[in-house]
Amino acid sequence: MNLECPYCEADCGQPDEVYPGMADEEEECPKCGKSFLYDCEYEPLYYARKTPCLNGEPHDYRPIPYSDPPWRRCEACRILEPKVEVEE
Ligand SMILES: [Zn+2]
Ligand SMILES: [Zn+2]
Image (cartoon, rainbow, N blue to C red; front, side, top):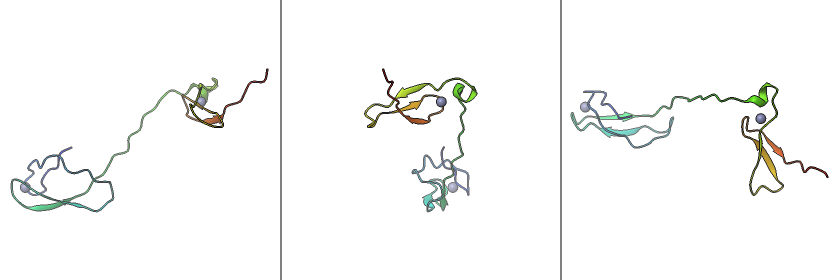
């Protein structure tokens, strides 16, 4: 999102990336020449996905490569479990 000058509402372009809650950054409007500070707020993003294993279906475990001891993780709900070796 581009910065907008708080005085004249001119488009001040893409600001330097700042972390939310960190120190304000100073910017000068290219149109009216006034200095202002800006901060950054991120809106939380949510996304939902199907998790059959939370609805009575078995977990969809996938082995995690290079884990030692071997672990596996469910693709759907992302729980981690030690990989259980099947006894023969
Ligand atoms: Zn301005
Ligand atoms: Zn699961």
